[in-house]
Every structure is written in structure tokens, then in C-alpha cells.
Image 1 (cartoon, rainbow, N blue to C red):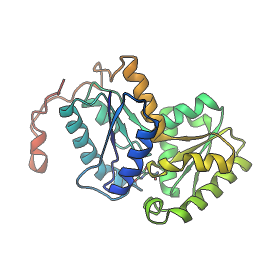
Image 2: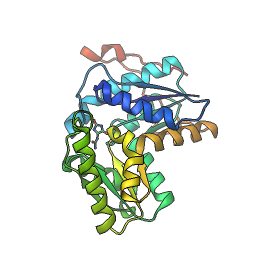
Image 3: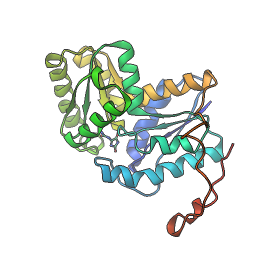
Image 4: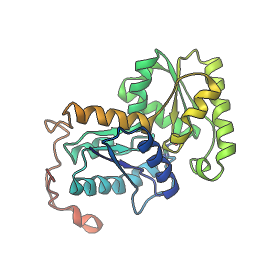
Length: 248
Ligand code: 2AL
């Protein structure tokens, strides 16, 4: 089984962190390819960053279709472009936020999310409502660290995240914590040990859900709004997307 894990930002060191976490959790027969767009923001911390990142992320899905990927993971906690990506393939496409929310509800009745910045926390709150997880989530908390601090200032970032997770444990009345950034993929065990609660991390959760769907023979439905986009001319810099043909 080939799972293509796409980091929608362009920071290679974060793609490596995500790849290592994905490979550590993957089953022996699963091959993980980790990629990132050529162009786009180095980190995704706003609606603008998300919007710009989506085109490069979708190009990575199209490249995966040419290689015959069996499933895709979108490894950014805003799940940018998730439904658009699903339109491009019959394979399952899993966003790390939705994966983590689903897993958290299977092991607890209430969870809190600990993410990077307050403004990305608001994006997570929108997703919780959109996905129907609003009443499972007690609180979305921010450690107030820029995403790239996870790579460049990692010791200080970990201290702030652990502190926020402890506050969530002590104040929110929760059973589990969801980590709210793809760049936190390697921190799960440490945080769980420090905080003493189950910690759900999206990249690893998404890889296991992708494996499960592929094993069940389930892929993205092509009936209704997730059908392949209708072929049409694209102009200007997107001309290469004209007459897009489904790979399978
Ligand atoms: C993210 C993420 O997972 N990767 C990134 O660049 N921005 N989202 C977040 N909430 O920190």
C-alpha cells in the first residue's frame, strides 16, 4: 500500500518530521511518500496562507495519481483543500484535523485541542463545527508559538505546548488532548508522558485511518459532489490544468 503524505507548506524539515512520524506508525506493508509543494508559504497560519497553499497541495495529489498512490494524507491542521483533493482521486484523502477529531472521540467523551497560534485555533474551531465535533471539544487552546518555532526553536516550543496541555488537563474537564499542527508529529509520546492523558496527533491518526480505508476497499465516492471535476479550459498560469483527466 502506498500512502502519499502531503505537507502543504514548503518547509522541508517539517516534511521530514512528518515523514518520520508517518513511517514509524505505518504497518510493515505500507510505503510512505512524503512531499511538499514547490511554491507556497513556508508555514500555514492564516486563511490567506491556506488559500495559497492549496494549489501546490492539489498538484501533489495529481502527481500521486500518476504514481498510483492508494491514499493521501493532507498534513496541515486546517485540512486545506480537503474536498478539492477528494474530487481529484478515487483514493481516500484524509485531513489530519478530521483524523485526530475522529480518533479522539473514540477514546474520550471530551477533548481539547492545543494548537500553535490563537488565529489558527479559530480555524480549528470552524472545522470542529463544520465536521460536527463541536460538542466533543471543550476548548481550543493556543501555545502562541509560530509554526516554524516547532522546527527552529523546538525546546522552547515544547515547554509552551506541555504547559498548555497541562492547563487543558487541569481546567477543561477532558479525557484526551488533540495536538493541532502537523509539525507536532514527533512530540506525541513526550507530551503524553508529561501530561498523563491520551494525546492524539493527526499525522499518525490519518495514516492509520488511511490504512483502514484501503484495507476495507473503501475510497472517495465519485457519486455527487466529490465526482471528478468537469474538464474545462483553464487560462493563464493554470493552463496546464485544462482538460484534466482522471488518472483511474
Ligand atoms: C499548520 C500545520 O499543521 N502546518 C502549518 O504550516 N500550519 N496549522 C497549525 N494550526 O499550526
